Length: 250
Image (cartoon, rainbow, N blue to C red; front, side):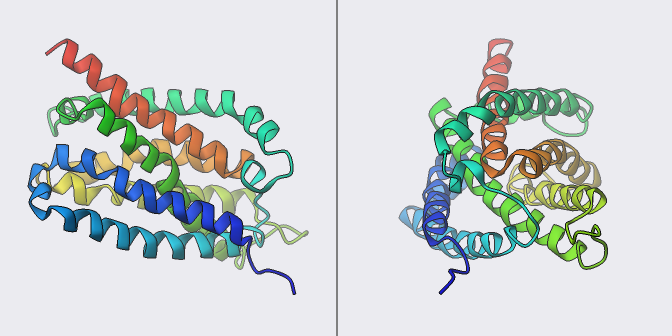
């Protein structure tokens, strides 16, 4: 009997997502201290939501990924280490460049909102590092493996190549739609820091959309692990390097 998904891959990805749902909590508490009032229930709630949400996202993503022709070379391929080394350097470079571009783009929103660097100067480095694992793993499983793959699959019903594969137009549309949702998904935490206005929404979509486009393109061309590496690297630039530079000039 043919398996509908690779259950080993499911267990690994869903498990890592659930764990990183706990790892991101110190970062969230550092930005919004009121969350600490929930005590242990904050962790219990995060773990339950993480297990449910990411189990569903991982299952559906793995179910659809083969239907649209995506590959997971580092995660499921026969030569995992060789595949990992093949994408490590380029993915890290793309992640670094996207992080720098996001920081530069954020300068255009200064005067309308607090900058990324100033928001995070109070976050301990260790907490920012753990949050970067959440971004690189959980957010990529949710936004690329599930959401982007879902959009590609749906768009393929409208237009596909003569061979039945998704078109480049369909891929880019899915990348952009997933990037927009990725940006909007950051608004709840932003709303705890400042009033949500049109500028704040635009900032969230533009800044996170930059990363979303890069990570989506890497997922398409090089696989999920490449997008994860790039996202993790970008988060290191955003959550650790940039705040450290800002603290040095404060």
